[in-house]
Length: 93
Image (cartoon, rainbow, N blue to C red; front, side, top):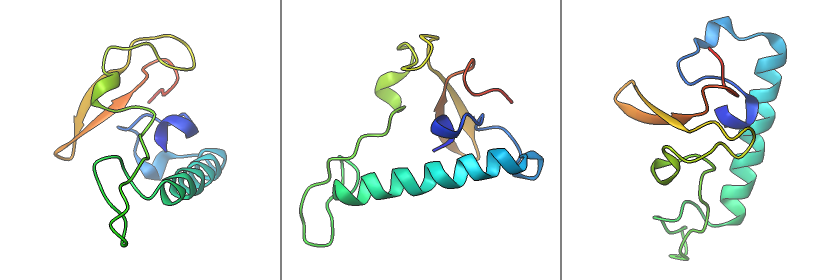
């Protein structure tokens, strides 16, 4: 969601512009719709035990791979005890 909206994962929510908030809302809606249509994440199953088929654009397998938008290597950051994958060029702080 952050990648689609161009927001760096370390960016404070309180500093987002109105345009960034709108982009993030649209990205959240888009990702959720796709994940629901694909029955959840690849490692999960839906309520009817149908295996999920949603794969996030950036994940541990994409670390170091070229960004799908600009070709810059994907990086990883630890944020609030979780791993976040991002493009340092497309997602500025």
